[in-house]
Image 1: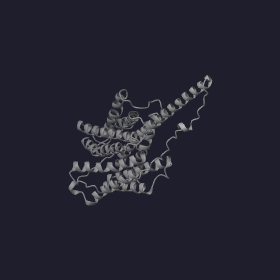
Image 2: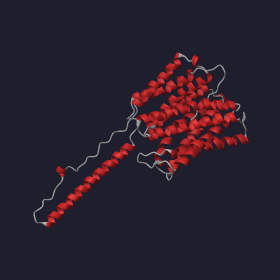
Image 3: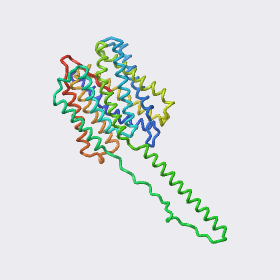
Image 4: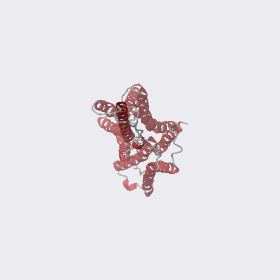
Length: 382
């Protein structure tokens, strides 16, 4: 029975990581003050603080009370801190993708599909195993690329609303006739003209506000794509770098995780707090629900990372653990988004087919990745 215990932590991880994007998106909207505005730094601060609790406080308690194999080293601390830095910067990429009006139901699956590819190539570069890559491996990468393009092309789009009808046509106005010499009628006509002018100005102002709001909520496809690629690069490089930190600490897992938590606190809490006053970031910390949602997002990310560690500790092999995590996390993400936002009527069969290609291709990449003869235990966490 013990041999299958790792599956419990695998399930915990892909549920947590599947909920990470949608939960963070809600917190970002609330902290942005609504109206389509999304805060950039405030949700990142909450995520960093949650990582500090899970990845610094918890390992500290376990190391003091129970201990763990391995040891502290300067080089191990350095590489693990670098891993936490790219992890935190990758979290910023997700927040940027949402700020540019990207939606979790396609942003997160693309990240989960592309990150394993980056992870595999970085690992291959460090282990110098490119010559061992098979044709099937590169076909799997091609499947991910085609599926990613399909997800972007067939993603559900919100229904377009009709433009407001302006009823200020001069022909539709009712003018009050005036009689020469009648001062009362002249005064009434002047007042009517002033009212019409005020109505015109009100319509123009209303149109300007509508256009401004539409501009702030309009998606930026190029910026979204760059943000997704940026996060995939960061999170893809995270695993191999963290693994190097683990090797430098004698195979310890909680010590490198502790360093990751410190990096998250520095990059996602200290730096944003310093920049919060100088940058014009919309929203405020007055919304308690936004803080809670953003903290919950950070907790799901950190608990998922911890779940990977314990899955390995209970005998899970990376060749089984990581494909299961990266295969099911996008499914959890997409199902949650479609269910909670009632998008069933807007999602086409082509979107689901493309999503299946991204997930299946990512799993194949992890399975078919060339491996060195020496036993390596990769770590891939957000």
